[in-house]
Length: 495
Image 1 (tube, rainbow, N blue to C red):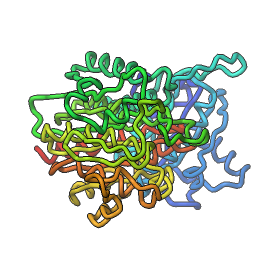
Image 2 (spheres, rainbow, N blue to C red):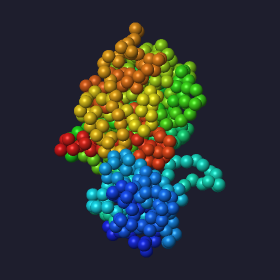
Image 3 (cartoon, one colour):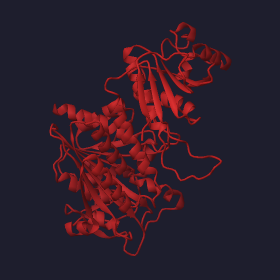
Image 4 (cartoon, rainbow, N blue to C red):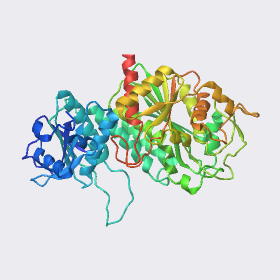
């Protein structure tokens, strides 16, 4: 549940009853641009005194926002946003300032926006979005009375700007991001495949989506051997490929969203050591991103049809679990030699991509926390993408820049396939060396998309310590804001 938003076109006044206030200012002339040379804003004298005491220049509160108590007793935070910086940098500045206020667990935050008309529009959207996604509280099971859980922000009051559209798109992105993060942080005993399927079905009913699922029994009968190979190690066999469908009359384009939903990954027979198994309840993040995008697109009423495919399973070790040197047959007839059981994500995605591709979407995008090598390549501040269409890759890059969720494209030339050649099957699942595994995984997946325009996102930025961009939690929900920008571009192309 997001905080309620109240808008007031008039500037905030000294008499406004508020306990926590965020002042967002444009960054003007640089270090010589002292507060006294600026137009009046709330707390101008207090900020000037604070900066003088700290020996700071005004421009420094872009990178290091400042906070102080006003004469009224309210805690006020000030941040300068540089219109010349990227959306990511702007989001980061506002998020840091918002954190100074949220640390006191307020029930209400007032946002005071300054600047010209264009600046006010951008700053208001930044501040409201940051308040919504950081003011919400993620699931927690802490019971300590010494440090109780933070309560969610209940109300946001915006001063100095009023949007007739009521921030509908901003709110939709926040709702999608929050859903993604809520699902991702749930402990694995609370999000088993069966419980995940139940949640998805309930959400489909409330949002008006068509719901369909293919359980392990059905997938065996269909010949989806790649997915079943991973799922068969679990007891009970509660895995499934879930299909959620959104259709609207005025849409001319259909996008398929595919997400890896491994609710817990032990590594299978190639068992992970404790250090790398810890946190593997987050291996379903790709499916949560796909679901978050679908929710946001629905709430924003984007004019695009969506098929959302969730590959929901667990990768367990058991006598029935698949093992090295097995040869299995995927849904599209490709035979696969199993090299490493911890490369399960590409297995469940293979058959899910095949199912999604059979619907002949205009664009197909898959999301997965797929490889450690992508994290080595980029760290956790970017995510990597691959595509079989150069035009689609360029659109993806542009969407990353404008959304503040940064991505980078990687090669997937055909000569990489030499590493995946098998003597006993059509293809190896991976290699044991692990070199360029993010590229080899993309080449492997490309065998299952047929001739559909396809983009694969390896979510190395799904978690980043202390947050990323506008998001202050370690789990970032990366991909939702990017996905909505991408879908908006697809919808505009069809107009």
